[in-house]
Amino acid sequence: MLPFGAVQAEWANTLDRVQQLCPVIRAAEVVRPERFAYIEIGMEHQDLVDTIERILFQNLLLRPLQRVEDRGTIEFQADWLWNWRQSVPWSCERSTLARLLPDAPERSYVYGYSLVLVEG
Image 1 (cartoon, helix red, strand yellow):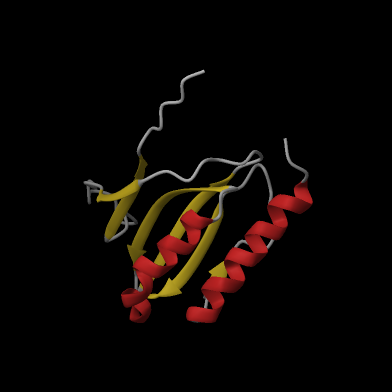
Image 2 (image 1 turned 120 degrees about the horizontal axis):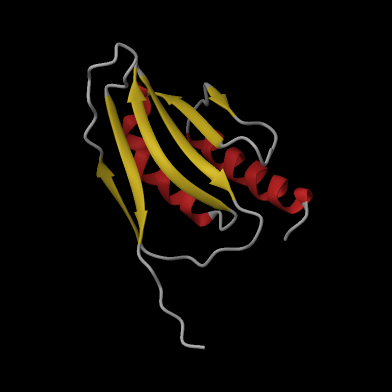
């Protein structure tokens, strides 16, 4: 298991790279095992989603989970990892939401990972 400082340094680098592209409305500042990582940007920067996703997936101490678009914002959510992961192909699919709840987001996308089999 990696020390807190290593995970925090990777997150700080990732957050800095996103902030160089566009203003960040909200973001997790400190790595906390009981919380998830998040970055929120304005919908006017929708054209940067592919680039931001690439940045998030380049952090091998992060496991992106989903992207939520709601009320003029885009939020990327992820788990912090405490061990290095392999870089693997990934996909993004729109999830089907039941819009029955009044606070359900407008759109949600879930990230999936391709498994890499290792002989050993």
